[in-house]
View (cartoon, one colour):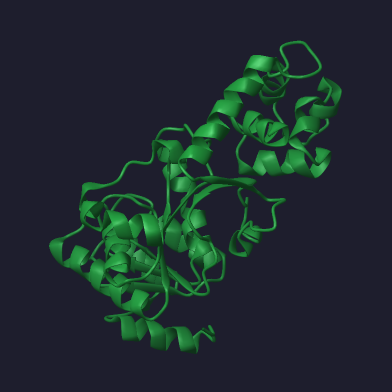
Amino acid sequence: MMKLNYWLLLHSIPGIGAATFNKLLERFGEPNRIIQAKREELMCIPRLSPRLVNSILSIRRGGVTPPLHYIQDMDKILVELNKRQFKMITRYNEDYPSRLRGIKNSPPIIYVYGKLDMPKTIAIVGTRQASFQGLQKAIEFASKLATRGFTIVSGYAKGIDTYAHLGALKGKGRTVMVLPTGVLNFALHKELYGVRAELWEHGTIVSEFFPTAGWTTGQAMLRNRIISGLGDATLVIEAGEKGGTIATAKWAKEQGKPLFISSPADNKSSKEIIGLGAKLVESPEDVLRELTSFSVSF
């Protein structure tokens, strides 16, 4: 418990994102060594700001180790995670997903409900302000691809994301919900009430954020690299003028993943996604056919 307590303590410090956390792990190896490091040792880390150094040192409150009540606070979170069946997986664990190890700023910790052993996956994303036709297309693609053995990955936002999760479950398949919040703030969307039993059995919930973290725009954007990272390919259904859909498409492109778009709207985001090299698809069969041309073997 103590080791995980230190991981949680470090993760709780505002401003320590994945890049900084990984940099500290590379230098010190373990979170307890980071928290117990001397000021001069921390100041030697490139681009680690004095403010962050002070934040790390403040955890110790002038001592060598953190006060007992800090440890006990982390204990309570670990107990709550266990109660809700969430696992805390660090990058040092064997069951850390291989799909995330190679992405830029891979999360040092993920919190997971459900299974992560997925032989083939596809990310399906799109706008929150989707049309009726877009929502139906999200269900259609997700359901049919799920019946072909694909786990459907999406960002658990309103609109296309939620309907992609719904379609996967209606297709008797699996789905991965990548949260922009901490897992202890997970709340079931009303659109999924009817498949609640299927979700708890066949759904996976993933977050890289501190378990009690609330929603922020920054976190919503950060989680997009996880969505594309967990997908072997990415399918965009209705990109809005704003939002994280274009960001997810860019991450997929950077990660070298096949990128598709269905029913693109006549807007800047859709045109930009097509400009990234996204293949236009009209049916799940088109996706499967295109994946063959990308030499993706399933």
